[in-house]
Length: 420
Image 1 (cartoon, one colour):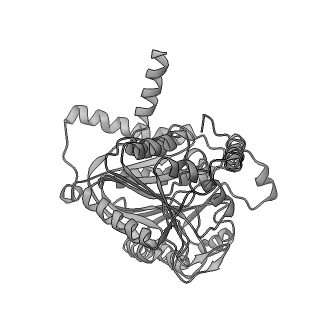
Image 2 (tube, one colour):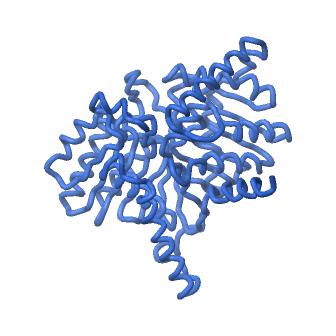
Image 3 (cartoon, one colour):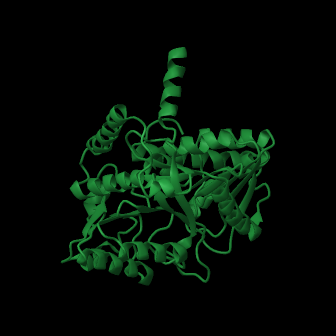
């Protein structure tokens, strides 16, 4: 028993985020703020641009970024773009035509343009990251797809923009984001059967080289211009299907377990595993104010139905639940104790936590957390608090049982291992 417990502790410790200082982290709300910043960075690029996203649409906002990427290519900038084959299935052909004849290397992760692709194993595992790195000096990470904020592929145009966030990064953490986006582009470019272990070998070899250099040279100061940046402490947390299968789940659970005052979590698709559910219940039980902001305007009714299966249990343990109804909710963010904050692509459900390729930035900084907390308060002010829904009777038990069974079957079909 002692040996097994030690093994579990080591595995959990290995998944902890690696925080680094010397970062500038700026919160961006929606594509209205993100896209002009990305376009300006791409138009000013001198060496290289790497971009990975789940949805890269062909609307006006998205095509403006396409033109910026093509202009960068014409200046001799190395441009690499990777999109998901399912999320960008409707626009991949248009994008390929736009990039044809240029030097832009456009890759599709797990393409779905042939009927037999649906029958291939592992097709439920999707690229859900939203990453952009320019010249190795600035990066953009978050939950915002390359599509107009007011356009939903399935529901058309809406009056108000969806609620979503990203961060603009400069400093020491940009290198980690760059390694992540290069890895996923290489995997898509070289083919779906390219061994994940080989992709992980390059960053590992680089880290070993840096470590050996430090042994010979001793501690080094941050390189310019990172040494002049604000000392914001942050981590880039990836979820993949090899060595980092539960890193994002552990980051959330650890922060909630350590909460002493407040937990505010915003997520459109909410069906957490046992670890996070227990952390939320225990936090509320020891007097921590725990608030969940979930979608009230549903884009996928099945996802809302799954979240509702947990309402009675969460509310019964003192967790406050709100539903955001002014527009579609797409944000995946959280703030704990006014210090720990995260912005990224990962939902709190089996798809994101155990199957999809995801990426979050975790920030330990009171100023950044205060800015994000203010955005959450603004959203809560126009949301509806949920009373106990579904009750605790037989119907509620059957609801939870059916949702749990669907989650179990889905994870087995997707090839995910371990308990959920």
